[in-house]
Length: 316
Image (cartoon, rainbow, N blue to C red; front, side, top):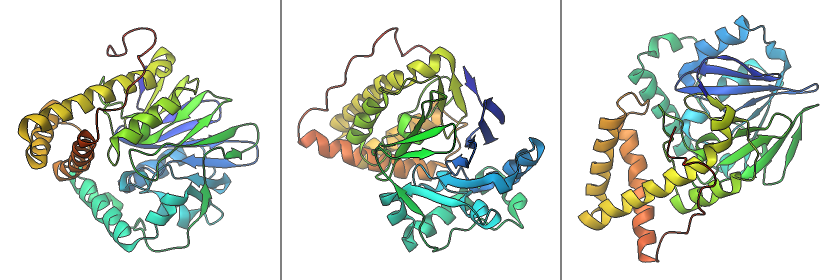
């Protein structure tokens, strides 16, 4: 089952934000951790939800960035400035990116663009949401465990969606936080998101199969529970293989990166008109995907994908 409303997910775990973008709050006995950073325009909604659900901001002392794209770090400046006790965590590569002036300019520009697209720019006045060059936080890596007291957060390095992507798993809740590294649960499907390196993205999905999952906590379009959560990664693996085959087919037919990007973007816009990203951002993402897959075609066939176990994951 897919749930997109703010509120409690289960004991000690909350979802805040809106349907198209959200963050999670995991409460331990000693520490409270925000997982992911959402989009900046969520600020009024999230602050209202924290108040409405009686969450004490003074208890929030950690924030884990799962990757450094603009739509996953937008609220980090807000919490960094409101909760002075907060410690920030990301991969080492994530902190490298977040120390680059060009990356910060892109985060701020894309954040403003999406806020305008969603028609909420005026509501952000009075909130300090701009990223600036500030000291990096703590780096986490594969195998690290964050002990919050009664719940633990296990870190996996899962590059492919971005070079800095990590995932988190909470075994006590059987809750997996793959960010976009697990694919986006849009409408009734899962959108593959191998943005920077599709091969690594597929390999990272295989790694996540080891996590027994009863709650799949996505960064976009809410969280997934029940049998669908348990099958989610297998289904995402199958759909990623289909997407790669589709990109390869169009590129081999057209022989052009530009034409392949145009066809993919137009097809996406026709099939998913309500998706939150602006067309120009999607076209840039597809350009990265096509360039990687076109380059990989020169090096041989796509990596083999293990067959999906159990029922046909192509069915919702």
